[in-house]
Length: 169
Length: 420
Image (cartoon, rainbow over all chains, first blue to last red; front, top):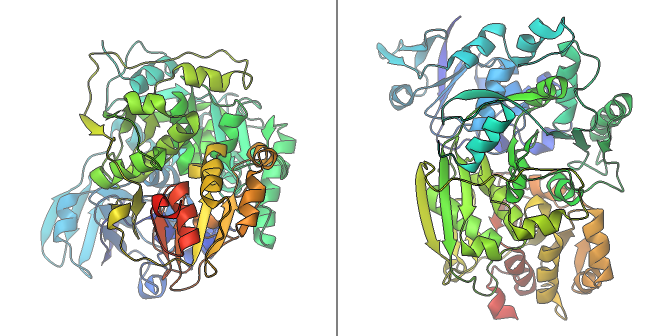
């Protein structure tokens, strides 16, 4: 899967409360959640961005709550991938589980500026900065996580086995 | 091979003799938890998997505690999804309004959490149960769905950081201050992907309530879990709560740690975390003049009986400052009733507190204490992110129940010693 879009650059410790404030969690409808994506961080994000754009952020992206509404809102907004120096662990799991592409790459975060055109080859973890003509290599996923990604998330992975009665990971 | 507690628990639940940090294992889980925000998404995903029944109707706990008693029509619909699913699946551990409490106060109280178990919960503060020597960690709704169907979850075996506390705690200093000190020290990603292990004579001296406060906030340092080895106090806590058999695990003397940090707490003062990250900690003497509009005492971090006792000790015979709203949220109905029996609730109300039925409401700016623009709260809760308790321009300062109670009296953040 190849991705191309404009980079939206943010700092460290972007928490799930600013990604999707709890006041909107009385619904789990992704379309509804999307309207408030990043609202407390960058109030017009959803209006400014175009489908396919990427979020590029620093350390510990997605820290805080376990709310899967956070990656769901980002995905439903049309963000094609999140590149960060590191991810908070629950957000990391959630993104893999729901099929939101994420890449851990401090070098990319250091060099990508707001508005740069960025292309990503997900399977290879290769990030190309078209504006600056640079390439960065993201940290590779362990085998098990690659299987999850290939299946399109955890539920699809489990569904592939559900026919036999019992499901197991 | 020498292993840490978390490695032993993961090995035992994944059918192995040993595991090493970095390995990915599939483990059997002992309990799967969800609430009225996360479980509706999990149930939607569960229904896509293609199985009819959950793996074990006794091993799922559903607690409608966030936007309950329901604050609006949408949240009522969310709660109904839980209720219907619990009935349809005949879940043993669904807690209706009137029985429910804040999940991380409730589950240990009900004896549903035991040493050596693996508990995953679609709530980040599930790590609270590490205080009883269980591997408990927060996951998202999809992981919860998969575990409800399979009874399993995948884990990357974490490295362990050990935190050793020595010394007697000074007055008005407790579990909250120990964990805030650690988070201030290592930062909100200082334990990212890792297990935190808390040990030493100070931890041994703490009640289970104080230990749960510490383990509860492991996530605020990015930790996967926060473990405290079981001891006699743990066993006494479990007596009368559970008849289930459990296995205690202890870290081996030669086990490998990513890092060991030692603290002498005998001079520690109450800690306050400034906006907008739990790592922005200062000792109470360095806080300066911070006027507050609201004080919140309760939550999964500090909503236990010991916390209410501490608040009542400060508030006995005193009144809240006329410009401060004082809100108190007992963690469970049992805690509420015990506090009533001890006269604590009367003391709090006499001091001008609004005492609520258990709910997570104010902690996450959901309901029952939402802040307006520019307002400031001191809270015994766990997060002070932008907009956490309401308007994005409001502010939350985190502290222990004694500091919150004293500040409610003074109208500004203050050391309990200055009020009592």
